[in-house]
Amino acid sequence: MSIQIVFETHSTSVDNERGRASGWADCPLSDTGRQQANDLGVRRRHDSLAAIFSSDLGRAVETAQIALGASGIPILLDWRLRECDYGDATQQAVEHHHATRCQYLSSPYPNGESWHQAVQRVGSFLDDLSLRWEDRRVLVIGHVATRWGLDHFVDNATLEDLCGAGFDWQEGWEYELG
Image (tube, rainbow, N blue to C red; front, side):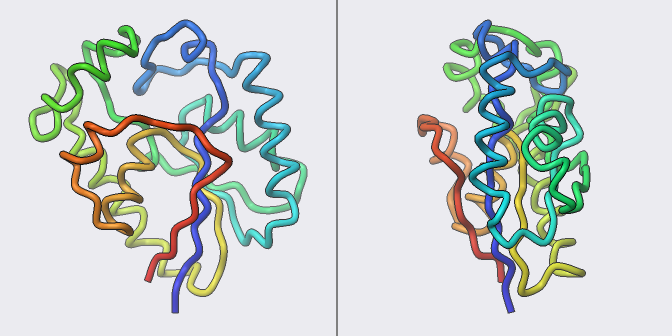
């Protein structure tokens, strides 16, 4: 028994285009992001999805709604799929986050959380998937922390390796849980 998970990042947000790391701050999708969400819907509409799980942050919700809101596939929001809470560093330059994020693997950002805490949230979500979604294919829409959680718990990647790796966007990542 297993669960097939397709992970897609939220589409490009206004903060992404400004070079800002949003963390838990809400920001809308940009025009480019809305087109990417449409493309996601075309890519996944006939992908045998039983459910869509999305972070409850606005940019992920907007991605899910534009992509597959009219498909009839249930969209379930879950706060555990949120990005890492950068606390006082929310909306700072992305370059700053990439240069310093390894410092916050175990120690929380001031007034925020650590990457370990964020990844553990995703692990809790994954534990709950088996309660109802065995032998199904689901879509998860989230953030860097969501992907790190999948890489860590499904593919056994270490947070130390993940924090030093770059991020190359692609049309979804496939995982098998179980």
